[in-house]
Image (cartoon, rainbow, N blue to C red; front, top):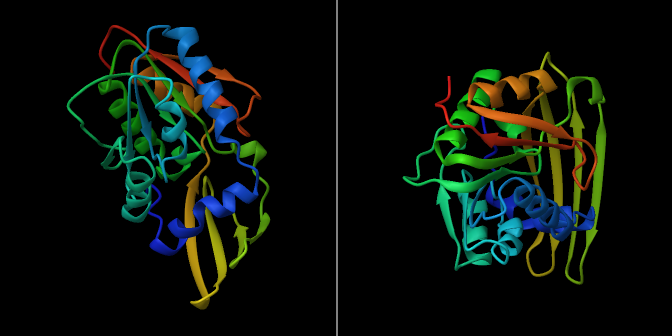
Length: 245
């Protein structure tokens, strides 16, 4: 299942990841560099699982047309408010149809880990391929590979602003190739008080070979780029002339 964030989490999403030092500007610069290296004339881009629109806000300065796709209604609403001049579609990256193609399609921040299975990974890449013309570029930031995952990992975040304190604590377990991450939030806001809510992020561990095979079955060549601003690297694919398998 792809991520469907609740309204509570969407409200503090940017606060939490901003406090972690997420550098959208550096990430977008790398996206542009990777796309231009393969498609110098690229003028249109689609951002899958675009969240609150932070990547879109920067990428719209680099491409003539940028659009987003987001499944979570609360995140969708925040993206549309943040970048009102950008079209953000409601949809599921595993199966979407927007009636047009793009020069580049991206899926960042390890959102692909939410698709749930190898079959859904295939479905997602096929959907991407349908929205790329020959020579179109796809950038996919993976989640952790199985050998890199730390079982029973505990993460914590504390965010302070002038009128707010938010705490996020998560605990991750591994069940085969699935990882349910249980997350608890305590959010204190002046004028509203304290609330506590929980969420479970169900992530999938895919191997490098499984990612590569999904690209190839979708009719795309692929390479894996180590390092850079992305914690798990980046898969970069180019759509070929033939149809997906």
